[in-house]
Image (cartoon, rainbow, N blue to C red):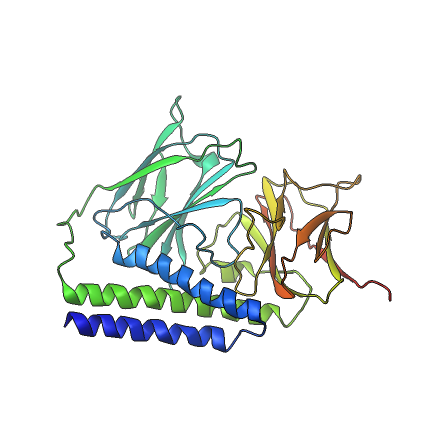
Amino acid sequence: MTDTVWHDFCAAVERLGDIVTRNAVTPIDRAEGYRYLTRLLRGGLEAVVESTGPAHPVVATLPNQVKIGADNPDNLYQTIGVDGRYEYRISGRRNTVHYLGFGAYGGGGSAGASSGARAGYLEDHELELAPDGTFEIVCSATPQAGNWLKLLPDTRQIIVRQSYLDRRKERPAELAVECISGRGPYPHADDTERLRTQLLAAVGYAAATATTFEGWTRGFMQHPNELRQRPREELETNWSDPNIVFYHGYWELEAGQALVVSATPPECDYWNFQLNNWWMESLDYRFLRVTCNKATARYDADGSVRIVIGDRDPGFGNWMDTAGHARGTMGLRWVRASSDVQPRTELLTPSL
């Protein structure tokens, strides 16, 4: 029985490679595609196989370098597996991170599921804090006094977003969680059928996530070198933050070409631009200049911003290094903005 479970798991993992086969055009796309699948599988294994279940929740930080759907380089992403029929208490200390938001969503964390609708959202400026910066949030289907995050019976996940303006100076919120109702026995890992379900669910998570954002990128490819606003109603079912207006796009450049993205940012709490690969993973912002935000961007005299995507620094604006890529995706987000501002794009080709 145990051998069958393992063989089924390995066969499912092998089939994941079809996603890369049908999409990879360049060697770098192929290499990054396989790496992407290993990252998603890692995230799925940690979220599902290592899960202690909704009666024994933990605050889990998204594993290092697991990147999904234009992950924000300025964000710390955390998840809590829950069951909307239970009640929970999140306790913590606010500290100094620029933005903190809690969202409750359906589905099991699989980006391909159709039940990722938002049940409730609670953001930092709504939090009632004690004088020392601590707080408690009750998460339940029944309204509560004080800090309350609404759950629905099919809620399966709470996503915490912590956004930095400057990681060097800001301290993230400290969080803990406990189930305060419906607490059951601890799930021991001695059930072969349970393990089979978990292993296959982890692969299913990787497959559904990759397939979802494969579809997004293919849609962006219909309008190359443009940024277009993602419909708000579509984001309602995709684990979104209601305070964010997203602009996504696909870029493709020849050697020496550059794509200039221009905008005058609206009054907003936060904004950022980022460069991604074809799989919608942010490029390696730890070492490369591939992102800028409200605090780090270089502004022109009139308050506008020019972001220049290219294989070399043009000497003006905010250069985004393509890092050996000829194509990929890109994203811009306004957070708590006073208005929607459509960014402009211009393709620059050097004269021969």
